[in-house]
Length: 501
Image 1: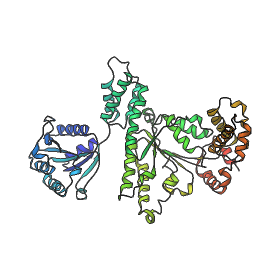
Image 2: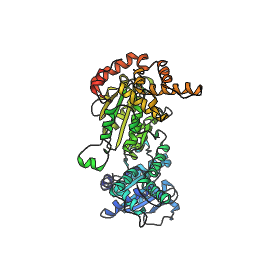
Image 3: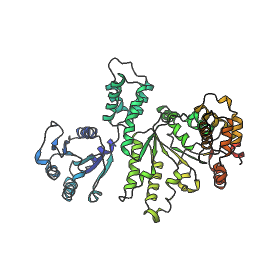
C-alpha cells in the first residue's frame, strides 16, 4: 500500500483518501515519501483544532485563519511549491462549499506536484467526489514493525526471548495498531515485569476489546479441548495436521494458507463443538459471525457495510478462525431475495463469496450446516473450502467414547457404568441426545436424593425419541447426498458407508 501511495503521489493524483485510525503512522509514511522525492515535497497537516500548519512546526502551533476547512483548502490551492496536504478527519465538514472547493483543488492541482490526502478512520465520500478520489486502506503494522515495538519494551537485563516465543508474541499482536501494541507490551511489563509466552493472554484480552467494539462479531472462548470430542477421528486428524499451518515454517515449506472447511451433518453430532475446540488446538482466536446482526434495514447499504466491517475486523486480528454456525440458515434466501428484501441477501451473499475467493489474510472460515439443500451451489464447489466434512450419527464405538466423555465430566467412578450396554441402548442417538439422557437421569435421581445409576440412564434413553427417528427422511437424504460429495468425519469410511438405522 505504501508503494501504491508513493506511485499515486509521483503520478500527481490530486485527491487521495487514506482510511486508517493511525494518524501518526500514516503521517510518518507520507513524510518519508515526501523526503524521497526530488525536489522534496513540503508537507502540511490540517485539523479543525490547529488549522493548516507545516509538518516541521511545533505541535502546539495553531493558525487560526485556516481553522475553517474552506480557508485551509483555499490556502492549499494558493501554495506555489510542490506540497502534500494532509487533512485529518475532514469528512464531518463535507458541506456543498467544502466539496466544491475540493473539486476546485483537483482542477488547480492538475499538472503540479501537489496532492490533498484525506486521513480518516472511516470512509465517507460525497457522491460528487467519487470520480475524483482514490481510496487506499493503510495497513496495520507488519511483524517487522511490531518487532521494533517489542524490542523497545523488553525490560533491561531480561532474559533474551527465544525465536519461537518472539514469533508467537509478534503473531499474537498482528491486528493491533502500533499504539495498541505499545500499550499491551507495557501492560505485560507492569503486570509481570517481563515479556514472555505467558503474556499471550494479555495480548488476547486486547483483541477481545477490538471484537467487542465491532458489535457484529463475537469472541468465543471454549474450555473444552478437541480430545474431549467423542469420535470424529478423521476430522480431528485433519485438524491436527494443520496445527502449524499459519506459521512461517509452513510458508517456507511451500504450503498455502488454509482457506476453510464446511462441516455438514445431523444436528447435535458435534459440528459446532469441533469448530470451537479447533480454536484451542490451533491457538487462534475464534470469532463468530452473527449474520442476524449483519442485516440492518434502517439504511440502504448498511447491511453490506456491516459485513465489510466485520470481515475487515477479522482480517485485522488474523490469524484467526471465523466461525459461521448454521450457514444454511444465514444464506438460505439469497437466491430469491429480490422479492423479499430488495436483493440485500443476494448482495451480502455475493460479497461474502468474493471475499472468500480473493482473501489473502490468514482467516480460516469454519462453517457448519444441517440442511445442505438450502445452501447455494456456489458454496459447495471445489476450491471454496479446503474440505467438506460430513458428520454422521455416531457409531457404537463413538457412542461409547461420548458416554465416557460426559460421564467423566460429572463423576470420577465411571467404572460402575456398563458403557457398552448404554451405547447399544442409545442406537441412533446423536452426541447431544446422549448428553441430555445423562442429564435427565441425574435430575431423576437428584429429585429422589440418591446417586444416578445405569438404569436411570437407560430409562431416560428409552423415554427419548431421537431426531434420527422423528426426521428419518431428512437425515436419510442428507446421508445420501454426503456419501458421494463429502468426506466422512469418522475414522472408518467403511463404517460410515455401512451405517443403517
